[in-house]
View 1 (spheres, rainbow, N blue to C red):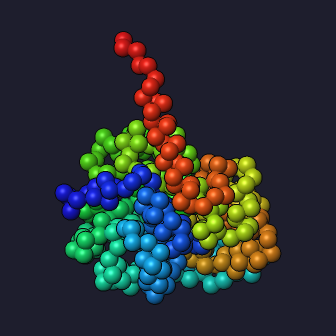
View 2 (view 1 turned 135 degrees about the horizontal axis):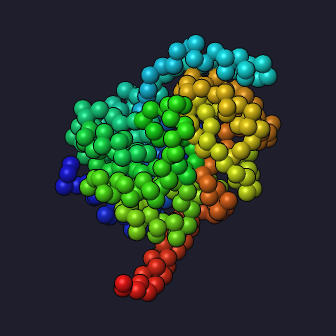
View 3 (view 1 turned 135 degrees about the vertical axis):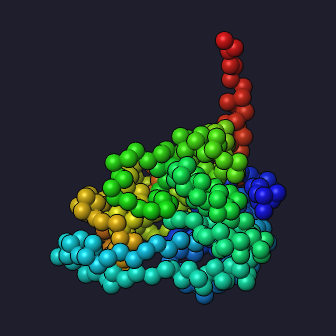
Length: 354
């Protein structure tokens, strides 16, 4: 695949990819709208069965004949029940909880589906598939994109055969894509997007897709100047009519609420808007994904139904206040025009020779 690393990225009309936002916001309509506007749409398959994933792929193909991708969560190991007991008891004192179960997110079945019914690219979050799994996707013509948060993760992905690296900065909304979620490493300063891009650009020849805190053409231009081939945007699309974002989440995005990193809702570090639940439970929440995700599902569903923003996971990046309520195709076109303007403006600046 070495000679085709940049086929998709090189053929985009605009250097914009849609972030695969699992749990509701990702829809075939949103994916198709971004693709039709010249970007690269991605469907989120996280939390979906292989059957539901197949249905969404079909619906996307009905809506567009442009290439698009599908994102999978790489499963990790189960968490010992003893590691979760204290936290579940803490939450259970005030909330009705679900079963803190472990599953692999239908991993094998979804891989089989994407081999049998290929898409242009398969991207991965929470880890890197094996070299053999990547080879299966390559054999049917799919590019493999792996999300990384550090140079070390990038080396693993390159060694396994990844074609494209999605560089996720700490500014990004939603889950951190780190291969392993280690609470002991929380004191280590996570890399911001600009720093990560510079490190990866000097360490690998793989194309880079930048993601994290990008919401404007100027942000896209900065990522391109730092070595990215494209920018992947998520939060800025959450208020688009094609997105499946729930009403509580949509409304909360309009306020200039600070964000924070937390494991409180899912047992995996993620960035969301600060609310009462995050402030009360972030300090005690252990690493335990997907068990805590399933345990908190009933309380989150009840809060959404009641319009209670204080007990819902309001995933959002640091620039969420810039997300407009506009059709996705219009947003892509506006971002593309603003990117061109920003690049031209930057190039017009006079640089004095020393």
